[in-house]
Image (cartoon, rainbow, N blue to C red; front, side, top):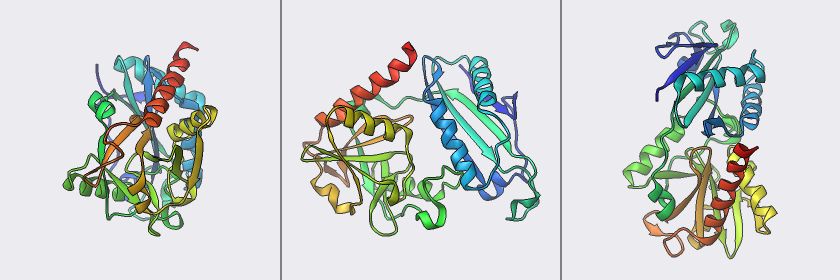
Length: 287
């Protein structure tokens, strides 16, 4: 098992990036995280589509084709020889002058990290995790739209630090207008009276690929689904809460701000959607 880094098509585990790269200087970059199953990338087409959408939203032109990305990812996975891998694709604006204007950056840098996946402990899924509603707010869509997956992650970092101080595994952030958004690296779902609820994209959240699959699975299986806008207090009456993400998949939340959610155990809707999601991912490998 190893960590391998592909820098602009060259695998070099000691790769370095220029101190003049605008991704380093100004967080001027976009990225995606992809997990594997059977060491094959899951939902890679969807991730590459979102990478390009993020890049277009910050007027960053990615010079490489999807075929190039797939070839380089396959090559880097083969070099790493991990049973399962975490893949991080980063595209930076490239090197330029120490000036916020990116006009001097003439070539983006593409970095593909492949590292052994660090699976979340099984107990997180069996017993659920704790969340804290923190004071750090999610970026407003009018400033830096959270729907764009960029290297500007400081508000999420600060939210995570606040959650840790509060003794929680992760943070839950409100929008500047007081509505529920998402966790630091995951989308939020909650269940109330049998209805599955999740903040809408208009609240200022990332259009999660796992979120989208879970919504489809819920609707296919007859669950009532509502995408909307709710204040933090809406979770006081939640029967179940869970998070979704590429690495977390479907993770139950059983404590919020130190208090039990529902009966303090992963609920039936969470468990059912987790099973359905795992089956959907497994079906990719068999195809």
